[in-house]
Image (cartoon, rainbow, N blue to C red; front, side):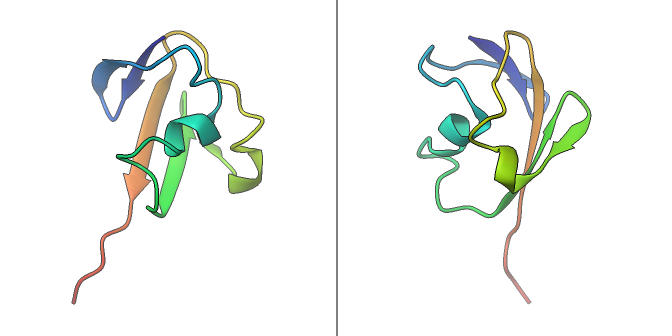
Length: 67
């Protein structure tokens, strides 16, 4: 499936159906993120039910510690 993630076109496997599936990928697992899908914030409680569609635009913002 073709998605735009953080402004860059990308392809994810067809078994990556939900936001939760996407966030379980190695590059996103164990990160605290905020997800925006097509301009709308997705609540964490909806990650498992928010179905991704061809061409969705996702912004995945993760937090970095420092000080």
